[in-house]
Length: 232
Image (cartoon, rainbow, N blue to C red; front, top):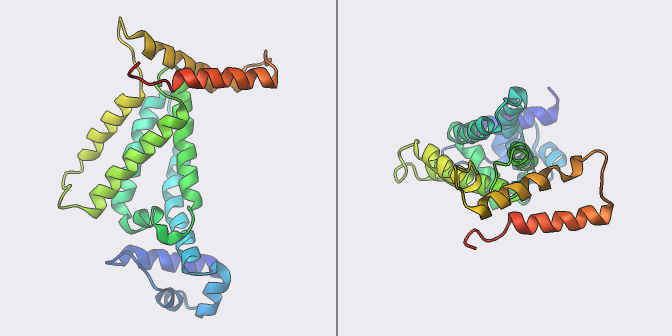
């Protein structure tokens, strides 16, 4: 293990055991067996060290998602992704809170990958005509709700003692973004689902029947239909 990895591993261990969810650069340096100037040379400052540490801890979670691959049913993957996200937060509360802390200065790379993985699942659902909104909008809605309930469970356990709250919120937000129209479903819902489905596969048409300008214009029209106010 190189010096950088040794420092990150030490910081991750101290972070996991920290009652207050914070670590000092002095403690990390001592645990890693290096001088503080080495730490600052490799990470710039404490925020840089914490970002690297959060990415390291989250990478363990994301590695399991990468290894799991995809099932035949994207809805099953969407539900499993929510549940594993919440489970990770409960198992690594300090690293999870740091992910969304302003103390990091900038967003860790792991946050971007988590959103990308979520969007890929939602794009598969869109291609099946099962989204009420665009994959981008659905990804923001799902991630915001999942993050909110996870932070509530780990930061206010006395106020939110029942972990089954996560499943209830999951099912509620999935009903808000997913469409499984029964007989006689409202026309505006089916229109939005159709627009979302076409939008998600527009770039995959082979051969491409539209010019670049035509594709851009069609994409704008489909987006306006897919994101239309659901109260219309």
